[in-house]
Amino acid sequence: MLQDISPLDMKRFIVRTLDLEDTRPEDIGDDQPLFAGGLGLDSIDAFELGIALKKAYGLQLDGEKTSGFAHHFRTPATLAAFVATHRQVSP
Image 1 (spheres, rainbow, N blue to C red):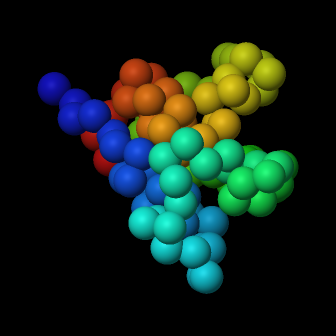
Image 2 (image 1 turned 180 degrees about the vertical axis):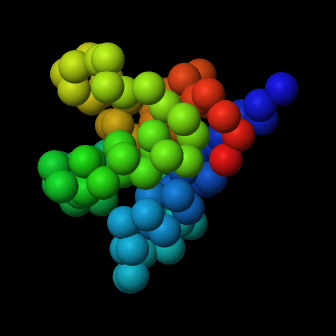
Image 3 (image 1 turned 45 degrees about the vertical axis):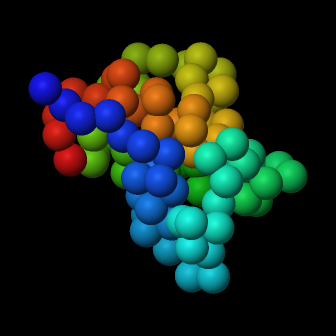
């Protein structure tokens, strides 16, 4: 059985994946927006993050339209919940 992914696990993944040098995972709120008005990620970051999530967790994002799962990329908590329910393999 796969373990749940916590928002802190997701924040660590985001910081490591996007090489956010001046950001510590502990300084990001679980419900802090990842994009506008929050962490300040952009569309390139979203693309990189999506690719990394596919590789690390076996997510199948190709069959869905971006608009269909974009709301899951809203905060670390929503992204962690999405990955926990859609991953295919253990990291």
